[in-house]
Image (tube, rainbow, N blue to C red; front, side, top):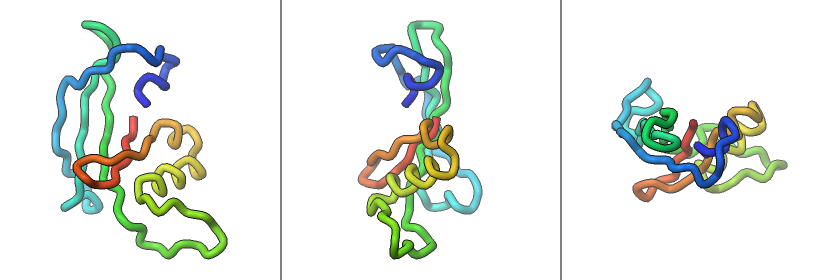
Length: 105
């Protein structure tokens, strides 16, 4: 995800510089949320922020005619990709600490 932005090489070094548990707004209270500061490239490379957020069960019911991913993080990424293709390209679904999360760069 980090290397795909700004046409970086896939083999460029990506290193976590700092990380913090993050509380932001009512929707995140009690949910897993972290902010990562990563360095892209060698010693004085660019800095990038990655937001890791727990994906929870949807509040709205699924449409009967549409196929929706059962994995909550994949559902969030799929929805973001449909609503805003550029944002969807900056997101990935993953698992972290046994929870579905999505990461945004």
